[in-house]
Image (cartoon, rainbow, N blue to C red; front, top):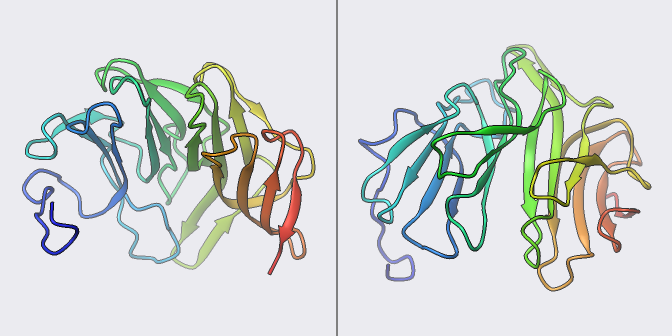
Length: 227
């Protein structure tokens, strides 16, 4: 509360895990926080899995575990800007084998229940999630086919890609329009000042991976930097 001069630990004694993948604070009520456990980078063999989502309604003084116990790794959380009871969780999934709890989950009641609104496969999870600042019904999700063994990292397939919803997560369309078909891990974000502009950093085949930009809400894309 003093611009970073000192810090208070809010998690020790409350969370039963050692890594955090995502933190989100409600814009309409700053006392409401959602935390997703399990780190999303899986390159190291010491990657620590999580045990779901926690929520605080008193700015982090106390926490309640609100589900998605088998999510494994959580990469991002987005809260509806006007309603802290509505939140979206990007579940990357477990890393050591297939699992059903992967993709985008939505709660409309503050975590009392969850809907699995975007699912691709039991090996393809969500590596990122962003929301249009001008219209919270528009979301972009980056889906990643991944996994690892102690001796091998799997990253990429044609199942992955960028998906868009214009109805608050009820339905999703996979975006193409210049994006590579074989993709690995993806990061995606939409411009707050110009919501038609969307950026994506994409792991792909040589000469096809890099920074992509769309000027029409994801309909078409151009590779603007592959270095």
